Amino acid sequence: MSMRPFKSRAAGFTLLEVLVALVIVGTALGASMRAVGSLASNSAGLRTAMMATWSAENRLVQIRLAREFPSVGKRSFDCAQGDLKLMCEEEVLVSPNPLLRRVEVGVYDMQNPERRILKLVQLVMRPQ
Image (tube, rainbow, N blue to C red; front, side):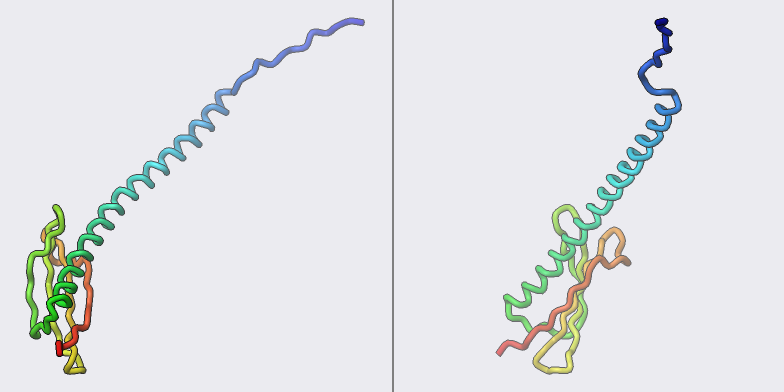
C-alpha cells in the first residue's frame, strides 16, 4: 500500500477575510462614536430644560406659598440656576372666572433671548 502525501493547508485567515473583518469592526466603531456624541449633546439639552423647569416652578410655588393674587401684567426677572444664566418672563392674565388669574412663566436663555426654553401655566385663586 502506497501512502500518498497530501497537502496540508496552513491554518489562518486570508487577506480578504481580514479586510472584511476590519471593515465590519470599523463601521461598528464609527456608529458607536456617533451615538456617544449624540448622547452628549442631548445631555446638555436635558440639563438646560431641567434647570428652566426648576426656575419656572420656583416662581409658581412662590406665588402659591405667599398666597399672592398677582396683578395683571407682564414682568421679567433673572432666574439663574447654577452656572446657567436664565431670564424668566411672568405674564398674568385675567381669566373668565373673577376668582382666578392665569399666570404664565416663560424661561429664556440669556445668551439667546429669542429662544424660549419652557413655559409653565398655573391658575391662581384669590385668597379669601
